[in-house]
Image 1 (cartoon, rainbow, N blue to C red):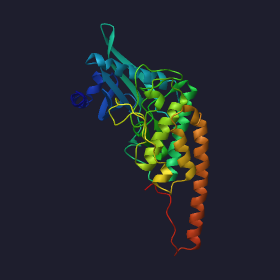
Image 2: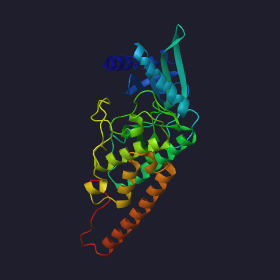
Image 3: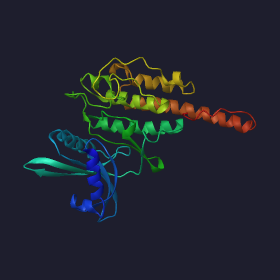
Image 4: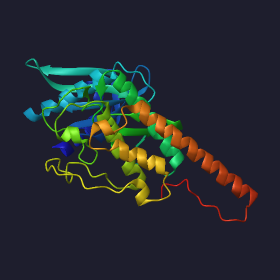
Length: 311
């Protein structure tokens, strides 16, 4: 069904066809798809400015929850104006017999790739990216919400150092308890699996599991086995990033493992603490790099270890 939807959307994009769906906008290309959604790059015909547009159509009863996720994303993001959160600008609904059957959301367009598709290859880039992510998530928490689905595919890297947290469809108020398990199996926090109250420490876990994957290329073992999201199991004791690669800073490895503690009380309490520890390790790392560069300048013929790669 989704492939059929993409074909329909692509045909609509030819010859400014999307103007028939959302007056004033023309589709340039299909950027990608999510759960029952297709995202276009569109142009506002009056100004020539480009935007991303997410479209969900209710084709069967179960699609209602995907419409609700777009509405949730808009509700959470629209009030936020933060450098590291993708802006949600407007939402448009089409109704039939008083039921919403289609929703279109206009969002900030960022030319770039997700962390999933473009893992940072240098530790200095890693620190910059994840400190910006932590800052964006802190703003979300200040608004009273939890993102609840931080993962590499929901961190967008643009030009000139732009970093954006995206896709707030799973977001909820701090302290909320969800009726069913929601999240991405490879990054999901234990409290999401156990369906107990979620708070900012849930995002700390999701972020820790994301950083673990970026550093090691291996998924942190969560309490959901496999990728189906149905089989609950006890997580195996994982190796730390430092155990996998002893070139990683010990303090960074310790931070990531602390973020991924099963008990929320054992994790950093919020993104302020996460960022403070990232900043400390970043400063130590830069000092080490400066010392290595100075050694290399003093002894150009000598062998100096390149420790700034994540390889």
